[in-house]
Image (tube, rainbow over all chains, first blue to last red):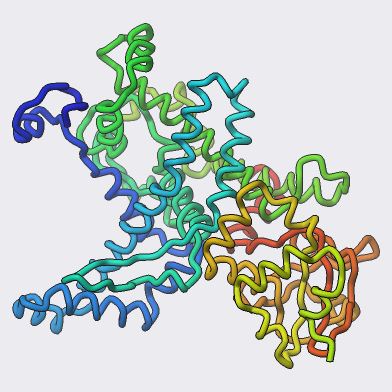
Amino acid sequence: MEKGELKAKMPKLFHHLYHDRINMEFAEECMRAMLWHEGMGGELEPYMNSAEYCQNADRAIRAFFKNNPVMLGLYKLFPEMFLEQCRQSTMTSVLGLFWEIMAPVFFEMSDIYDEGGFKGVPDAMDFLVNGIFAIAGRPIYHRVNIGNEWFDIVPKSKGFTWLYEAAFPYVEAVFYRTSPFRGTKSYNAQANEVPTDQNDFHYGILYADKFPVGSAGIPPTLLHQDMYHFLPQYLVDYYKQFCRGEDDTLIQLAVSFQRSMFNVTSAVIQAGRAAFLYPLDDPNPKHLLANRHYFEGQLNRFCNPKYGMDKATRLGMVQNQDYR
Amino acid sequence: MTTIVDIAVNNEGFSTLVAAVTAASLVEALQSPGPFTVFAPNDAAFAKLPDGTITTLVQNIPQLSRILTYHVVSGRYTKEDLIGIKSLTSLEGSQIDLDISEQGFEANNATVIAADIEADNGIVHVIDTVMLMRPHWFYPIMESGKVGILKD
């Protein structure tokens, strides 16, 4: 925490009271979104509902509450509730692994940027696409240590991979969907302000309105607050030059973050194209047409007029008096 | 008896595939009576993957086996058998999309460059690209792209 906002050594409580802390609420929101939006591809989710998973979880739950008869009794009464908690912790573990594997790619990217290695955004995109391929096959699993014994709740031997079981569902759940949040805007489900089809949910970071950042209950606010703690000096200086300087750093940070997420989404779309379809310079017109359908299909995700999604990412359309 | 593995070992251009199958301990399975239909990526197909892709997979055997079993289908299917069939279910569990026309024989985004190589326990079709499982959301995206821009 000495690196945090206050940059001072003092008891943890004071850091906490000053909100100088990592909030993790957004991480939790991501986990919930991934769990709640089912059917986003990959084998993990069907596995979490299989008898095998329940058995593995059962062993771990019994070991964890070995000396706690009350909890064991509750477990007997409400087994599903405990299993659901276990699924949450599996998803948290998956997210942890996702970032453990992804973070080095971003760190390397940042080093290359610092050294002036990227001539522009396309270079950075190429780097990301290759990076995604390089780590695509890394294993996704859930292993816990309870009382000096290891429990494989999702064993490595299931062959779950970073790309299919973590990355694609993550992009879908976090970048596109998440869930409507209570905050500056109230959603009226009866008035069809919330899509009836979960596939159409669009509360992710790509559609986020950055201006109410700072108000209570808006998940990205906390994320940006967390990022603010570790902002490198050159970015602090950069944000000071624009808009309202230090006063709206969080919003400027939110804008940068959203843009960078559009870059990552582009890289994921490109990686998907490279994995499932054809190179951009493929000479076969049929292949190029398939590439085009894929690209247009992806773009359609940003322009569903039914929920005003075609306007959602255009600030001018959102920032009107009626919005809040 | 000439098995699918023998074909890969005795022909040039499959050293990466043979190494991968050996690393994943799938040799014995592919020597069993089967029968199997194998879409076998050649060395050039593996070389097309970005750097590090194969290294990561070889270090993670269950994940490697999953990709490899995606290239295997239970049953013996020649090109002729597959005419008019839209997809096959691989041993991995995901589907492989087929497109056989006058222009050629394609499986997912791979083109079959040599079809119907007979083994005693199956058939080998040589492909020019390593196939990766297409997640189920891939199909609605493609459909939506075919329709064009959504209208209310």
